[in-house]
Image (cartoon, rainbow, N blue to C red):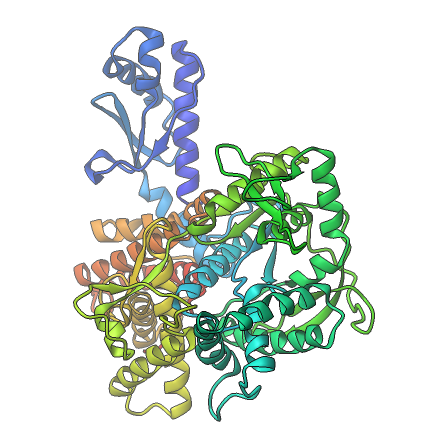
Length: 634
């Protein structure tokens, strides 16, 4: 029994009261009031009925409360009161506390994970970084949003497939091929430098500078791009080799952040397969694209977009644009087009799962008979700069068979660096408060460098606090703290807000940070360890936990499954991050307000220890969904 049952009782009581009082059934809201003196839940039904009933909401609320009170017995509701037309409910914690804490302690592994998905298939695409460079701190937000959303969907029993789109036939790949083949760059990086760092930091940045000085080199880029797209030449094979080397280094970075994937979709396979040609013919048949005979898009195939400027699908030189590749890919994800791909095992991942890759046969033999597309809902995670293209894709899909809610673009804003963090990374930004990044100009900080810096600083702090730990222990804990710092920082804010990342702030053990949550969990485990008690079973005097801080903590623990369910419905990792922070803060306040280890009454002491254990379960399960490891020691 959790807060869900209390809420269900409230909804049932309100519906019974409406029926008994002769009011029509309406869709009403039951939610937590803004101030705790108004109770645990509040209902707005009287306001919804006021116009129809031609009565003030205060009078309607009073009538309904009378009817509700007649049926309160044997429910989780202690009382119902009116306040300005609202109906406010208090929970009966003499029932809710034993039931909630008993459930947590009996089924700790599954606590807080509702079956709201019921096995429905969700396809999530995230990361999709061009394979010509390392991930930078801005890409980290995409990876972490996507992986957290995957974990939320998994926790709510959705069958979730995670895709990583590899643009191995785009301009950026052509750039590094031009650098290696025609501009004298050594194909091997300097000693000690990761290959993806070398390609992005040196080859890609410098070749773009060289284009400005040498127009012939820029022309060479067009020829290289054409060969890559055709996929048959030595240049195309070389591009594939380079792409895979960069991709494998990128994956190491993503795995370090605890992200995982099901399938790598290679753009070259979309181009070479009949997926694009079939989609193109379908678009022409449905008159969703046309050939321009004149004007600025002369010689191009364009697509008309509602309330938007026409978008080029195929350039006049015959090469496909980004959106020309994105539309068939999106249609494939939804299962609107026949699947042309076979699949092969690619690499084993950090969590023991296998990562697969598309293949078109030939020497690249398929090794898996699996289905990755056909999602009942497809969620594509791309930053807000791509919102226009995503709107066009959604419009096109709706005209060839997709429902309006089936294809969803989850947008997010950019990541900037605080002035202090930029300076710490050796970047001079003058008097500016923060720094925007640009891959082409080489103005960015690599994700690996961010993680290494966080690890180093966390290691120093852990070593100071735990001088007896081995190097292996120190590094393991420091790595988990580094991961929690970056993951939590990237999801705790609204997706439509620009993040200004600060290394020092993200590592703080106080305030709204990942390490603060880990510290709260470690504190709870230390309390249990010091008690010397085996907190087994669920037969404790939970009905005697009546202090305000105890009730507040039980209430937070009881809400976990509702929060996880809401995060899945609203596609909001932030809501779960906020819950975890509130849970940790409520626990710390509880520990300040009431004695646990020093409580003289043995029954209350054991009940409080069981409450501490239940808190640990709830926080650990919330952290698991956030991709953060709960640490026993820090």
